[in-house]
Length: 250
Length: 301
Image (cartoon, rainbow over all chains, first blue to last red):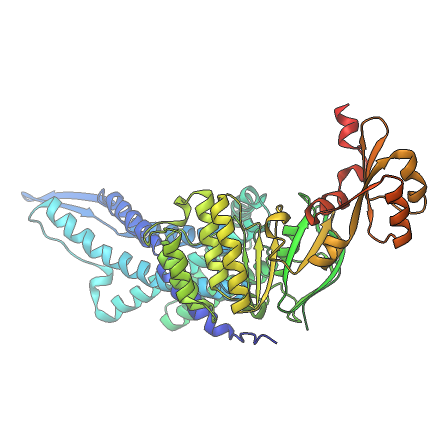
């Protein structure tokens, strides 16, 4: 009897993760592009105010890296969605895999690039300050928010990473659902925005408001982190459960 | 020991049954040719065996495990076809390196020797290869992986005659050096029959026959002679294939179980005997003339 190779799932997941790190690093190119684009849009500023009294003119321009952050979320969503497409899933099947290990290694990869995405998005805030400094010339730049302390900065950074991960998980789920049937390409956005529209117009319970409160109004950082991680885990579990039935190479 | 066991295996695509109550067993360390017409279910069978597709009903066991979602089956089998999807970001050399990390019995030496022999460049990309080169590269991966179950779905697509010959030689040599179960589907049985041990013939999702190549070569006999002379001998046997020659002559293929006396009588009456090659027989056994639509001759006339 030919001796069969006994494999441990964890071992295969690690191998797949390593190969994905090598094979899928192209997502970082799109990350840079997207963040530069975000930076470009941020240069416009988000508002300005000018007052003048007693011969002193005060012009305040507000700049925000929000655009970079939003673009990074979008990038996370799209990158994860792309990973669920047929070509990427079939790549795994060129080597040793089953659906579980394929998904888990993807989740690990997504977590890794979320860290990179979150980190660079926060850092891009500093880049924005530098660029603004050079554009405006020798004017006073007053930092707010993240610059206000190391603890605050660290929390903001971690929160950003976690949120990129959460958005990526949603992209992954959306991608898997589309793989089940093509009709969801149309149906899914329609359902999503339809429900959103409906739920934000109901009187007694407002979903977007609830979401905002649930995640963003959470003042205790660890609880916020737990909420986001739990949500992402839930979303990935659903994706895993659905994709367990997906065939490849039809 | 059976490596593959299928019982009443059915795989349906939106109502169309690519495999229909298919049953077969394949023993360990056999080199089996899978033959059949286009759409006979060869590829579907291979994809179900390698866990790509999920069976609709029935039972399929590879190494005594259900292949769908089995890591054990995936680790011990490899499926090579002409639509292999390797990560597009990896060069050919990197694909071989990755494969060597995954497959335990990977034969580094063979892989790189063949890589050089067929003139691949390390920095080439799989998607830029020509059809024949692509098949050649896939074949290298399939052979070097040395999986206990190696499945080749029409591996020679696009290869030129010289490369095809090389492939069959390498296949046989490596199979002898490192015995394993190899499943190979082909439309050119005559090219590969010297390498094969067994042939599994499929038609419309069912097994038509499964026997050793020697048995298959002896399975049928061709008779040629005048129609009225042939007729009495064929009264109680089923012809596998019939073709008219001229006004009153006929070529008939039938089971090769004529008695010695029958043969002598036939010879005396001027009937000529001929062997039927394995590949011709497979065509006759699965000829589309046997179902609705009539024979090709009917259509052409």
